[in-house]
Image 1 (cartoon, rainbow over the protein chains, first blue to last red):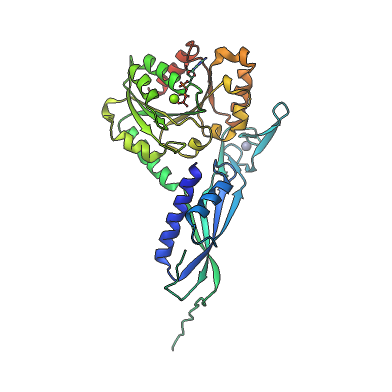
Image 2 (image 1 turned 45 degrees about the horizontal axis):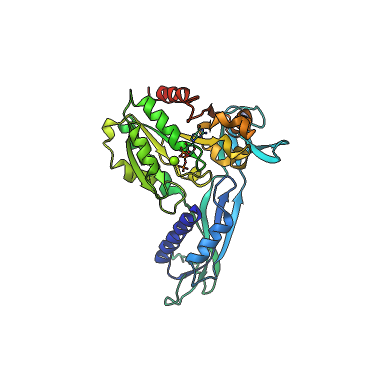
Length: 131
Length: 229
Ligand SMILES: Nc1nc2c(ncn2[C@@H]2O[C@H](COP(=O)(O)OP(=O)(O)OP(=O)(O)O)[C@@H](O)[C@H]2O)c(=O)[nH]1
Ligand SMILES: [Mg+2]
Ligand SMILES: [Zn+2]
């Protein structure tokens, strides 16, 4: 259920944006979600639509970010290794360096949960509702 | 010489993107950092215990508390949806316990922990154990400000518990496989759970325990007491 928490946070940022920029109407949202976050894309969309109820015309775009690792030993930076376990039929992320097998790996991408940008429409009618 | 400043104005109806780059989990991370500072100021080791519903978190904590409370002052924060059952059991083992009811939320967050920390006399505590809400998904996303994160699974959840929830193990420093005495009945090989955990998080420390039969609990408690020095 923490998709609700995330959706609420987004709404808060949108409200702040509205206060700063009342000549811009928000028509779209671009969200970045790392593949290694625990949040479910559809549920975020669901809660946003619920919370934005009366103005359902905002286009919600969620981009998944592929995980990228950095190896502190050999400097390798790139995709993460997944190993297929024939026994389980699952793909397991394998946090070891693809090049040198070191365990000193940092995940530098893949845990994002960002409100990347908003798509806005310029409007001079200040009375217009903005959300 | 007169210079004309060129002004670019957007026209009515024009559509464009505005970059915000707001980290939606930032607030939690910031409060978690404050929590950690507070713990360090008082020389307290913090451990966040996550795990599936009924994996044995409370029983394990109770056993650890009764071993370590002879030497250390321990406080336990108990995250639970609604009840105080877990809190009562742990209190009787010799720890100061604060119950955090999360209501409908599936996880603890740093702010709830911060509130709970205000209720404790921190200068009298050596070890803070936090029992997170039983759930293998959401708690992983919300750091609390502890020094270590532990994930408890049990063999009764079957052989796929780890591979089905790999992401939470990426967040873990310690993994515990509990109810080990039931491995034959359940036809689960703990070694396979271990190797899955180690694949996902190569540096993870894994312990096999039976909180009920007191197997491996002493070893886990010793590991924690070493972190306290
Ligand atoms: N057989 C066996 N049962 C255990 C063991 N550890 C705990 N249990 C039992 O499993 C049940 C759940 O244990 P808890 O310690 O309450 O589990 P929990 O993870 O705290 O559960 P929640 O807080 O509800 O998510 C209880 O009936 C315990 O007695 C064990 O090692 N072996
Ligand atoms: Mg419990
Ligand atoms: Zn490497």
